[in-house]
Length: 134
Image 1 (cartoon, rainbow, N blue to C red):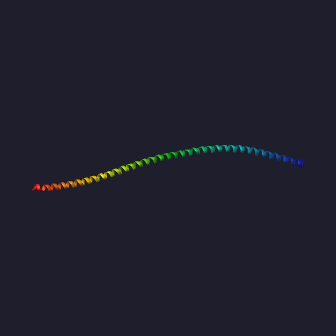
Image 2 (image 1 turned 120 degrees about the vertical axis):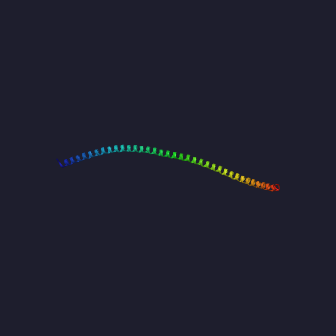
Image 3 (image 1 turned 180 degrees about the horizontal axis):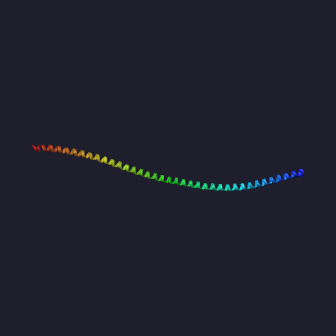
């Protein structure tokens, strides 16, 4: 074999080896592309599921907060009603106390007038009795 023929054989072997490597690389790239596509689809599906779960959790929290806000509003209303009732009761009690104080003052004045009248009457009886006893 001539040196040129030997060189040509080596070049052909090298070309075949390179072509085989290119085909293997192409196959691996194709498999990787398919794997990446599948993983991307799985990732998008996983993200979608997580997004749905997150939205459901957010909706649940919003619902809980809304319920608590409603309960707080109802509690505030009940408290305000009780406070208004207490204020009304306080006014009624204050008015009753004022009426009682006024009635007591009237009774004390009437009692003082009665005592004075009675004492005057007793003094007259004693004065009138004096000449009768003689």
